Length: 384
Ligand code: ATP
Image 1 (tube, rainbow, N blue to C red):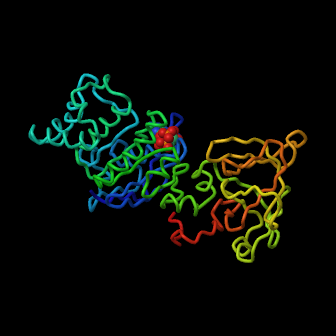
Image 2 (spheres, helix red, strand yellow; image 1 turned 90 degrees about the vertical axis):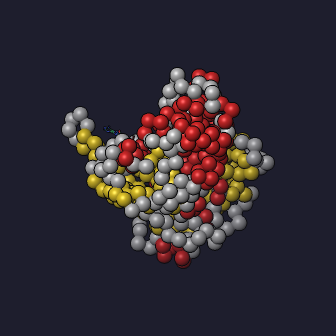
Image 3 (cartoon, rainbow, N blue to C red; image 1 turned 180 degrees about the vertical axis):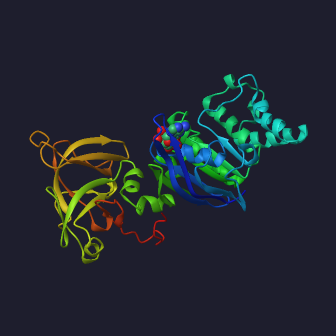
């Protein structure tokens, strides 16, 4: 167990034409001892490269990696007390579960056969695969193979686990149960863990904290709820949350936000927050849009239901400004409403958005100017 620190970590690749690809750009994250940190971001944002640098599988262009009180930036992978679990299980097909799990210890440590036997038994117990120790990989399901791959990392009792999309080969149901199980195992072992995924649901549900990466740059590090309710910028607001936050480009006119479609009045406090800007992006989470019969105040606007996607407990209702038939660019946005509510495609409705729920971002930089008001979330600023 140890604290893992990434300090201005940068990786520049050179492509075939000799031009630079900045895959990871000055990323600094402190991962606490025993913490489960999820590194999340879209494909190509530099997640795997970051993890591979920490593992020692990729050289570092600049910056440092520290584990506990040691700098490990230039150490060989074998010298780092770090175990990595990949998306592909990469089990040896001719070996049993027990052999797959003990192989690394036999090769790289001077542990006795009895000690290795005990470690494998313990890890197999923890992972619920004790009955499968004599089976070969072809006799195991995908989920069981993934557990063996995890077991191989666990028996090493490393200071840090690195996991690169370890659940992505599993079907949706198994993935969801393995998410819970992995969290339980990580909590039991209390090993500092860095987990990479492009799946924001995985990040939200598994991480003590999440680090959001885009284009090689760190956007925000915070608890899942901080990133959800207090996004540091428009990118985080849009990336975290499913369905995504709705965005509207608005002009600031005194104490109103105005567009071709909307005219949204602001309280003095919110108007102050955007006073320096001419243009802002208005962000509204789908669950913050209420569909009402008639406007209760002037934070409401008339729309038409485009499509309703029922999901049982709730419905995604796609709303539209203007008429699908006649408008050249009918702008749509999505609201989440109770599954029992009855609205139908084509129906005109009133959408109400309380001002407390509104996010505002600088139209150019995307930086958050004002996040939704929430009393019960710790009043800390997002850490960037
Ligand atoms: P994914 O979720 O698709 O795996 P990622 O976030 O893990 O993506 P990386 O694999 O870290 O992204 O890649 C980051 C950037 O670096 C990408 O633009 C990628 O094309 C580039 N890249 C990665 N490895 C190399 C390499 N060996 N040579 C050149 N460019 C590379």
